[in-house]
Image 1 (cartoon, helix red, strand yellow):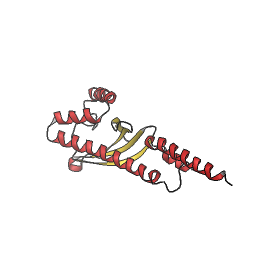
Image 2 (image 1 turned 45 degrees about the vertical axis):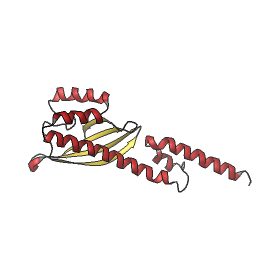
Image 3 (image 1 turned 60 degrees about the horizontal axis):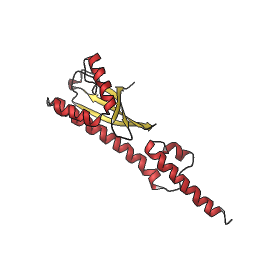
Image 4 (image 1 turned 180 degrees about the horizontal axis):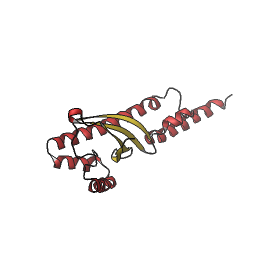
Length: 164
């Protein structure tokens, strides 16, 4: 009976360490489901919600600034936002997509939307995903949904594609 207390404490410390490593990778949810967290650990409960909120806020802030800049004709500011927010290796892929399609790669369109919504769509393998719904003027054109991938380590956008 004496040995159970130290072993329990050591197991709780190990479990806490595992959560500390897995949490930034978006893998603490599966770890928690397997019983690898300590009971009542506030970090295990609140950190995923905070990470989710941070990703949505970051993507929302980018699209807000980007759409506003383009709507005002400030292409220099829009380009600066891209440079600051999109991962460098993905910028080249965006430019290649734009050359092939004759449209803005961030918006996947030749036009500038009048509004947008951002919703969280999960995390895993070092990335987080959001669904960006672009709203168009006049209602003649249906909303466009984009699947935006964000690198959890850098916080930068690392992929954009049409949401299917």
